[in-house]
Image: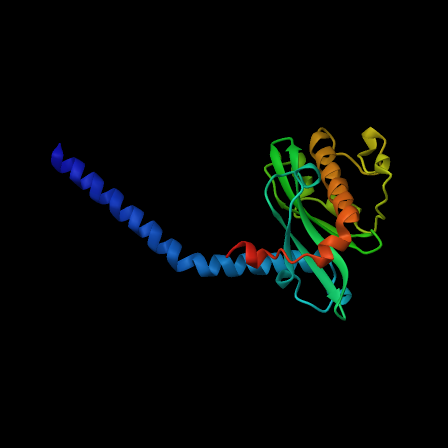
Length: 207
């Protein structure tokens, strides 16, 4: 029995070491792929013709549990054209999705026009709530071009009297999503100048 225990312990140790070794070998590749995916999404929600800087390099952290859906800091990316800020892409959390928190990112210009919205992560039900994922449906593209005003009555799903479609059999997810977008846009409207002047960079936060 002792011999079997030692063999089992040795096997577990080898497996742990193997996992750690593979993780070390692939960590740089994973980081590079994450960076490429981030750049792709940022350029989708703030078109490249609108700015002349690298969005991922102009990152600041923001915090507003009430409007951004989490107590944690979230990144926001500033778009510049000829050294002047022209738009911002801000991450937010919809904490009340059907199956938990939904992470999303919204691009908006200085006039309050939504440039794009994308879902970053979610656990919504396949075939129902996962229509928030661009790979499943174009629903998130319906935010693009919408002018955000303080009139929050239209920033709801149609079932609640707003302008956005809900999903058949799954209203909770789009309702939470639209609310999160509206709250994030409210945050940007209230803090735009402060955001553009912020020196609380993502890089500094990781030091």
